[in-house]
Length: 202
Image (cartoon, one colour):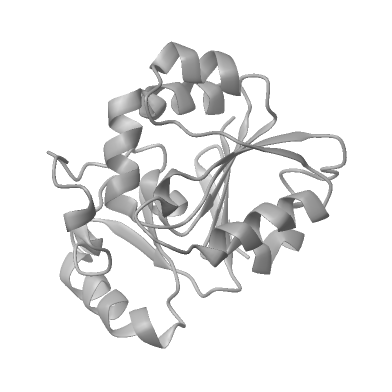
């Protein structure tokens, strides 16, 4: 049964992870930093990384760029949790496709690994990035040919809904795409817990 924890900012809702991971102490988490690459500074990623360590995970950085599906699968199957941090979602999707992470992570989730997404990491696993064309800079991934997401879940989690910077664009995305996709807007202190085909906002 697939288990995902989809957030705006993981560090703000780490205490809500318990239904999926009751006791992180001694468990291993792979931290995928790829989405932050286009930015000179990415404090949000550092905060999430340290929060994973703080609650007990043995946490290691793992860059997917330049790797193959089999390499990623073999490396990440040693971990209990796969954490994909925030940043540019289009850049993340491009490198997920290029490396084979898109296929490897599906295999790993189906084998029982817990997936945690923060912002871009939450958007990646939905059916499409089409609704967020105006929320993120698509120019960060000029070679990206398709906005189809990994489709691991059938919902699009719109992060940072209570953040002034994104509220108007998030509201527009909800209006414009409400008939095409099932979308859930979450605040920075909320998360979506997915277990199998069921999900709930916490």
